[in-house]
Length: 328
Image (tube, rainbow, N blue to C red; front, side, top):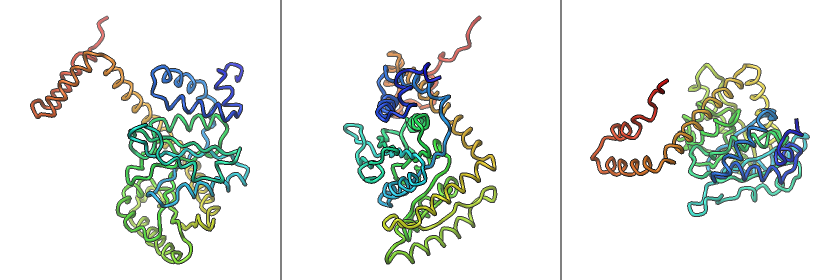
């Protein structure tokens, strides 16, 4: 099978880190010639993925997501695992690249040969992830990394977008995070699998424990009876206390999902959503690739913006005849 692969795919599967980096750069590119090459590469590697555990890590800015991943990655390495961490950073509005470069905040983990840390710009994608996050995870899977960890941008409730590419979601909060409970409540109740209250050290230890009690009570009361409420526990990244217990809880919840069949249902829903997203993007790209349609869109957009034409009528004019039935 490997002999039939392209040189880049063969090198990636063999564990060449530079090949993985080149492949990720390729799938993240929006250049026309790279888009086709990336599609062929992903097609080669798709049958070789092992569909390993994918965990999303989300939470407000400054809560310690990168620091937690640094400790968590080292814990996984000690267990003999090969973790890959994909860090989604806010994009520069000028250059389009990552602003924060969170790899620099994972000092220990980024130095380890058996781990892989990759910052990726979010671009114009909402939901806390990038347009190509799912593709990059596929590449890391085919390259032999396990588990795959995704750190979201960390901008609030829209972070639920990460659930389109991961198996379960870990939410990291600070002691006394009452505002987060109110602001993220809908996302927590629908998507959170494990919640960790960080900075449970020093004078904030007692407050962290009270926060756990508050979250546990609130989530137990409001969570649908069809699914168990998320686990809530404390962790101190600063003192490296509770990281092993946190990962054990993540693995326990993952095993529950596998045993109940919920994991496969989640993945099936993700695949259907991915198909729809890609189809919409490709239809839009092809629509705009026609010069006359692009010009007409610009004209109608001005009319709609000025309140001179209903948006529904503009859409009708733009799409009339596009999907006419074929004549045999």
